[in-house]
Amino acid sequence: MIGWIIAIAVVVVLVLIYFGLYNSLVKYRNRVDETWAQIDVQLKRRFDLIPNLLETVKGYAKHEKETLTQVIEARNKM
Image (tube, rainbow, N blue to C red):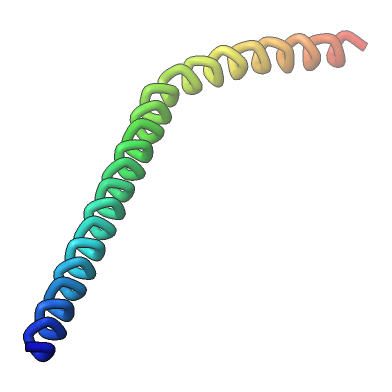
């Protein structure tokens, strides 16, 4: 009789350990999925910002070219 009680207790403990490990794995999988979703959001944001950065750089390049041309012309007049 005591042998059966011990066997049932061991089975119950093993089942509890199994469910605990399973829940931990599900929790960690959800964390991984959430982290990848955040990475995707940041990559999309960066991808969307690249054209804006390119236009800004083009604008500054035009301004710098005009400024350099004016400086060269001013030097040549001296």
